Every structure is written in C-alpha cells, then in structure tokens.
Image (tube, rainbow, N blue to C red; front, side, top):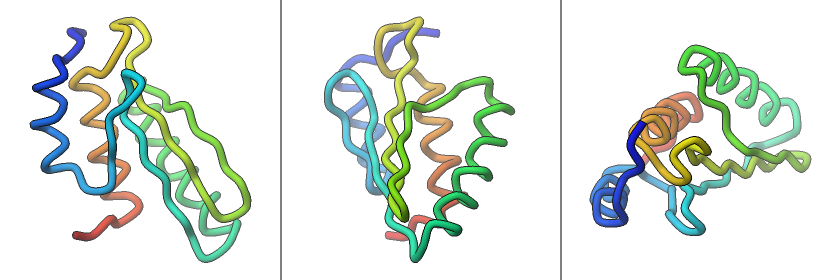
Length: 96
C-alpha cells in the first residue's frame, strides 16, 4: 500500500473528526465513562481491525484509550489507516 503525502493526509483529515497527524501517524484519544465502556469499545474496534487485517498501536489507562495508526510496511499513513480511523469513529460514535 502506498504511503500518502502530507498534503493528501491533511486534506483527508479535514473530514476525520478528532484525529491529528504527527510523527508519521494518525493519533486520537477517547475518554469513556468507566473502564468497562472503554474495554467494550476496544473489543468492538478489535473486530474491525481483524476484518481489515490492520492493527493499531493503542494504550488503555482506566477509562481512556489512546490510538496511533500507521502502516509500518509503508513507513507512514496509507488509505488503510484512514479506513480504520473512520471505522473507529463510527464504533465510538464520534460526533461533530
């Protein structure tokens, strides 16, 4: 998969709520009401990751979830990262 240019990434980010681009990756974080809700979201995201065969770098601390997306084979962000980010936003129900 082809690494996207900085310009392509910035353009795509305009339509991707709550995500940022830095350090050659897409980044976001979510805060949930409690640990159980955070873990539930992580499990739902995991199924989408498996379906896409693309897995995030993520950390969980009680009710917070930090996610980093990049395609290691391409050494940066690809279309696949945006596809997963969009799916994550739907799963977590991110609103404008």
